[in-house]
Length: 302
Image (cartoon, rainbow, N blue to C red; front, side, top):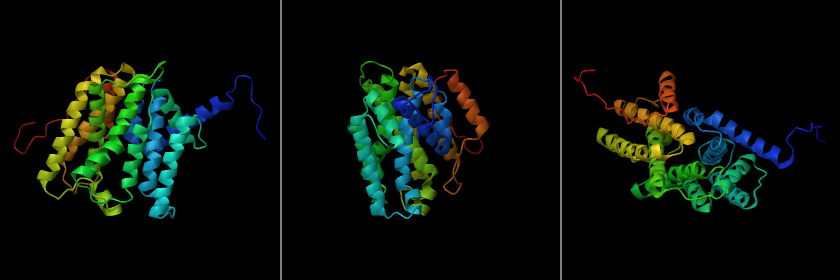
């Protein structure tokens, strides 16, 4: 039995859509401090779409990163859950509805912004890899980062370009390349930050770190090159999303700087909250992306 609603209350699909968007927003609030922080700078045209993308990505990630195992699922059962989520997602994109609120929110975005299976399937393939591959070489690392992060950047770019438009269009290739490289940089920063946990708790080595400073520096050099490439195209994004992307870029540029100062035994590197506020305010003022700060060696003046 349903309760009575007044004449101004939302009903039917509109209410369901809004409930799905609220579910996606809850996922971001619970799971991501940095992403949720930066997403506040997104304009209302794109904010719910980006949150819907992140929510689906987060739920899929949780299937392979611990909670499903803690609930008692075997690896085979986790794989079936992931397969089912992928098929639910593709079916919802086709039909416009899902009984899974997070999937429904994502499908709503996908249908409006031209996100299709060419981006969805590589993402789920990378998540599936987490159930079978523990030690990545250069080729498998590249494929994993493309599916787990670069396509997510491309999904977000589709919303930046197409949200609210009458006819979706592809993004400019140069901007798409920058979106991919920003996604790769963010993913590799997280790999480096979480290397101890990934190895100890999950048995995974994404970067083939050998403990040497040179290997660590090489990874950071690649991250900084990707951040620089992304920074060169961020000013070409629409203003209602450019500031949020700048904030995310600058947060991870700061993490890159701090990772260079730390060593592998320093624990998970973080950006202090007061500095996050500074970076947020800078991006909100529409400042250009900030590069990673140089790391002074011993003996240099401050």
